Picture (cartoon, rainbow, N blue to C red):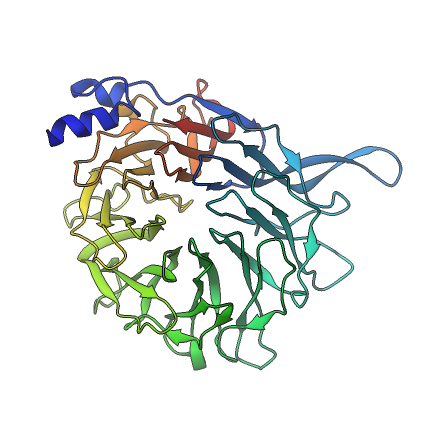
Length: 460
């Protein structure tokens, strides 16, 4: 019965269930931008609506009346059950934008995009945010008070429509690097005063934000307090207030990236550390819950393997979670690691022993790696970059593949997603009812059959 359920689930991704699955047809995809500047940010709401944001070229009229082009924030919106709209620029076309654009989408369909403008006449520009109410359109970008000079913004949208923006800025103290700031807005309301959520001498980097279905959440970042070893710190958000920043990791963290996902009580974090190893790529994957009044207790999900890239994490409204990462055995090449996944069945449960999703992922320099999605019933989808595209029929370039599984079921055989080009920057999200949406960018790179540009696919 379990094998039959897995086969039926895989029919949403493949045309056959059996030995020919790897050569099945790809899900239909469309191109939103034939020449994007950045990879996409994607968000999917509970009903299946989706937003894609990226940096692309937009025409404008120069001072002499001639048409010129600027780097602009582009947006495409998909209503539940519909198609993606033509791209629309939402940033001010009088200036370029930087590449650190971020998107957040809440369960109802509320969304927010943050970016920074490039201004050669000023040393610092503010963080700009454009918000969209559920079922509405993105409004004019407005500056967040107190954010001038900030950089690397991140944004999260809660299930009730609140918005949380965080960014890095100089501490003003010599030798202290950056500190972490944040500002919050209630659904439909203005942003409150920006507050520093890290310590005054954090030497912070890579700040991220997450909100759950009721607006509780957290901000997390990498820190080197007093110039020491790198650790993971976080501040929980509860009742509109941030708790005191505290260290979450128990050993120096490894790799640049970590991940954070909002859940019913706050947020869950996933990261890597060296696990007592000195140098090399061996280490551990750990997780911890962050919430006001809760003492974080890191738990080891995987230990001892050769890890490639960061862990990625997603949680649904009920508190179930899905963690994915890439790991190679001692006798396997690190540039072709296996893709693994671990599930948490409920908010109070632990992450299970990792399962192998696919035996050939990728450790490409673009840092694409695997990306997870989870629906309300626990059906999971993972899209990953693979160095073994030829058996899938997508050629020798680094391509993209998909695998899916229901709760307790084995993972389906990987199915191709990209069209044969060099595919990077993939993201995927799922509606409560199981429909998945993926977005990525692709370049031909010697594959004339490949379709270039920023691509989206709806996977039913």
